[in-house]
Amino acid sequence: MKTAWGDRGTMTPTETLKREHQIVLLVLGGVERETQKLQAQVQADYEALGKIVDFARNFTDRCHHAKEEKHLFPAMERRGQPADRGPIAVMLLEHVQGRERVKAIAEALPRAEQGDPAARSALQENLSAYAILLGNHIAKEDNILFPLADRLLTPGDQKALEREFERVEAEEMGEGTHERYHQLAHELGKK
Image (cartoon, rainbow, N blue to C red; front, top):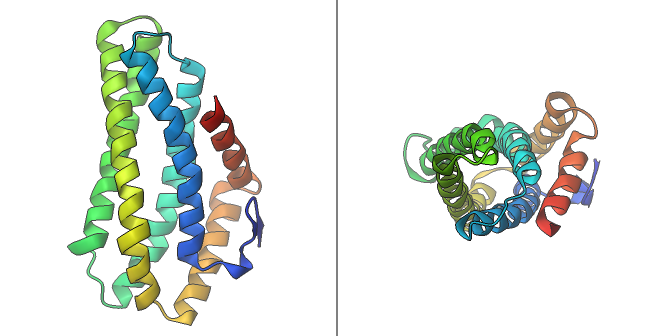
């Protein structure tokens, strides 16, 4: 399958997820920039913050985390890695924590844009916590969870995951959506 990164046929599922992490990290650069503006009492880019929420909900969570939660983690569990403790349990907990931070950001955003100081403070706190959480989360997955998955999963498991990842992008996200979020990430990372 052709993606914004080229032909994914040569990438393992964990390599695909690592590439998606690079896209998420671009957006985290935008999160950190907007957090610094809020800390400095400078006018934040509320349009960009709205796009960050959209990206976090749809690309990071609905696409990327769905691939992990619905496909990678169960495949690892079938190969003996428990989901109720250890690396998978930590990743699942952090996915929930990330969703809670994004929800708090989305709730504070309209009030902060209207100048509510408590909402600006909540926005700043949750943006900062989200960036730290996700940055650390990505490092754990790239350096601990994915190497473990590569050791556990058979070539057949890998092929099945590749097909499921393609299905998530095409059917659950919709054709072209994945690439649109890649473009948005580059936009948000450069502002």
